[in-house]
Image (tube, rainbow, N blue to C red; front, side):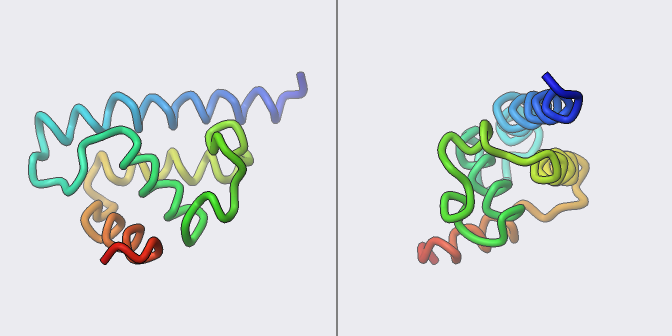
Length: 103
């Protein structure tokens, strides 16, 4: 396995941990005003944001297995931005829903 593939897989594991554990925990326990709290909703928002529209128009399913190294890094950076309050989750969610025609 080449080093870039291993690095990408490691970054994807961080992304999955953030979207499956950290963000849902924060939404339920510390930030009850967040618009979402389910792991798949965080994944939708993050993936739509890094793709610039509905993620499945750009990535094969399952998305986490098909992220490039750069996309994985962007996803982790965005998750960390949500955690530390530098990324506005409400706006990100609204944009994601707008791309999907749900607003």
